[in-house]
Length: 241
Image (cartoon, rainbow, N blue to C red; front, side):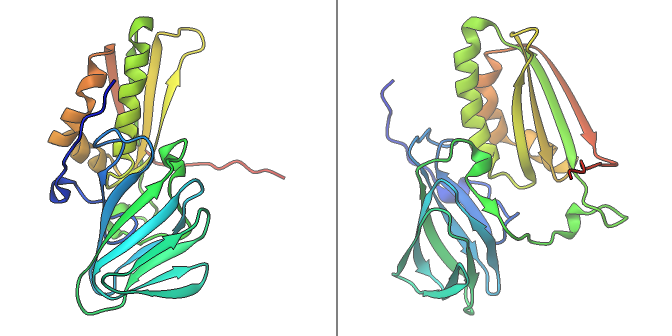
């Protein structure tokens, strides 16, 4: 299939805020079907930061358009001013901070792609979000389960469509992770499960025009859909000795 050029307006992309600031994946697998990497923007207000993280499979290229910032790389401070660019090798922990008095804007590119979106960006610290807490102070999360039947002749198209959806949803506010599962006893039976900071975050995405356009190709590939949403009320972790 021949790829066609694509033009995307950054301000039409819903920003992700879970890691601090406003992060947008402008050109990537979820927006233009890119296969080698993705490019986006970061906007940081004075005092804001993108939390410390690392990329186990990707190099990062960061170009500052405006604002005075500091990029902490493995504990070493690197100043970043307008017109300057930084290269972050694979696997190095880094954090971006706006240390100036004005809004900071950067363009970034990551490549190559990780084998799975959940492995593209590993956080080593978090940003506190009071709205993501229940009344008793514990983190509130939600589980979404969506089952469907996919005929064998539609399986390739279904998985290709899901691949595009999962790269896009990885940057959606409130999204934590998702999985796609196939029944070992009935190969036509599939289930997509996802974890969100809250049920409200999922429905905000599910009702958006972006979501409707994104999942339309996948909907053409399945039948007998069933949907369930659950709020997590208790959780037990395994104990390993």
